[in-house]
Length: 510
Image (cartoon, rainbow, N blue to C red; front, side):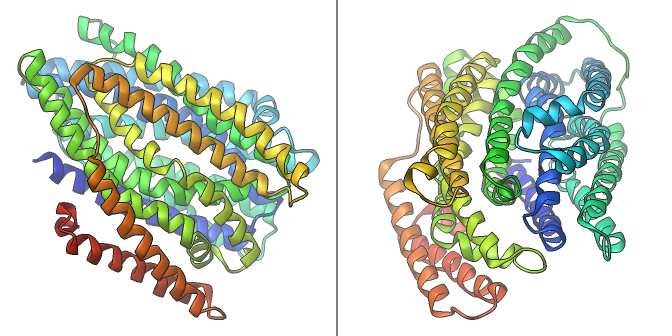
């Protein structure tokens, strides 16, 4: 399978899973709006998500997948099976210990992640954390399945399986949520997440077993295993540093005002869509191919440079209009997706404010994923780790005063602090991207998207955004869903038409 065929399958799986995730968020917004229970649920999912991101995507992408892909490409199936089984055993043991510790220390974790929560709100969050932690441990094992499947170029199943996780939560809420208090509804959502995590893991296992019949689920020492383990620690710390950024944002949001944590969660569900759909799909498809590039050092560098430039160009084509859409049509998008039930038009406007802040760093954050994957393919996990520290430190240093002090100094609503917070994180992502780009370019040669292409893409996106915004303004008074269903597709179609008119190559494939 070609890399771009793999990228399309990853994108298709991610698109379906993200759509189901937005439906899940819509159902939660309908029942909870941006009240205290919604804050508690958003915070509760933030804490155990650390486990999934630490031992799942990050460690596997940087340490396991390159080594396993190389063994598979070289036909060393027996060694590949031993490596995969050993990594599974280590992940299962480590995540089990972390889950147990996390459940026991949930009061301390809640005080760290949400220092602004008090009384019943804090108690509810603690209870939710204890409920969802085991499910996130299962998602770590699901991420291991993803690593095996990706290395065998089976991309769709692993990225579409989260649909089952989301569907389980949606069904649980729709069947059991009506007529209950917000506090009871979030408990139903938590139990649904645990059941969904188990289903997501189990559905991938038969294909994994069929692809790698040499799996041996017990620790086995070998030079390759030791190499993976040595990178495991570096990446674990690096991903941990990166996750601190999400923790800091949630902690600051809990101090801004009631509903701010929920607003942050709703906006992140949208802002992560282009990052996942385009950055993750291309990065995930490229990583095994990059890691398996044959030839001399110069030949490998040339091949990586070509792959990287093609990937960056594709990311730019799709993410630049996403940036403009969030800036110009963020209120329309948030209203069309979330408005209804307990979620008001005012709530949608605050989500738009948070989206606008995130949009500043959207392109940099997405391209940064591909640069990080290139570094992992070069067996260098230390560089992304170092720059993650810079990003987190800068984001925290800017986010805290901007979110908590500036609104008071300007005499504006405190909830504007969420937009300033996401803006600070976006700026830090831009700095991290520039550092990654410079480091990779020093190793393999100059990389990046040509300026002329960027100018054309930004121009087309801005013109399309103005048209979509004008149409949305002309439809004032209509239902939020109708306005979104009309204006957003017009924006997308006009961007596609303009880029085709200017003969942008990706427009034909889009």
